[in-house]
Amino acid sequence: MISVDIEIKLKTYHDRPSLKINRQFNTGSITKILGPSGSGKTTLLKIIAGLGSPESGKIVADGVTWFDAGQKINLSPQKRNVGFVFQSYALFPNMTVQQHLEYATTDADWIKQLLKLGQLDKLVNHKPDHLSGGQQQRLAILRALAIKPKLLLMDEPFSALDSKIKTTLIAELKLLLTQLGITTIIVSHNLKELEMFGGEVIDFEGLI
Image (tube, rainbow, N blue to C red; front, side, top):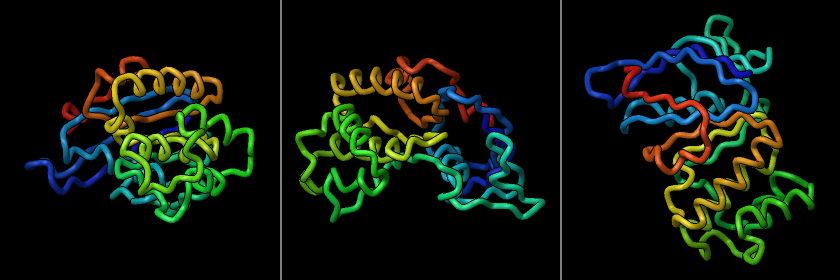
């Protein structure tokens, strides 16, 4: 279980200066976060991953304190074992599809399973510049899964996928997340595309 009790300063959301989050995310649960631009959705993911710090509060995962403003505790991203799917993909331009996954894991069988999941098994020697936007997005998802994270954070992870591939990927991804017991938080502007995941929906519009 991951407990988040923090306050985030907002730079762009009209006259609302901050967003307060006090939530528990149960192990293996899937939570979908909605809200307008500037409402703090992406900022929350980055803070949980250790890529930013809130103004105050605590983040505790399975009894381990990741962040505590009062105690000046702030674990590095590497120690949090979090998989992050960035909205911009954040792929390495000089690495092939295969190398992206090998950078995250040495488990060859797991890599093969992921490549099949993302329908990239025929493109293992391609670099990002030779992949479509949808293929790059799928690679970003696979790389985040490669470390078998305890927590998976996804920022608009299906925006570049066509409807057929999206439907297939979400169905298989949901099964995999359940099998591995991965706690998942997904940020999206499109609630409909995430209906297959089930789980809780948090609308940031109502929190600020």
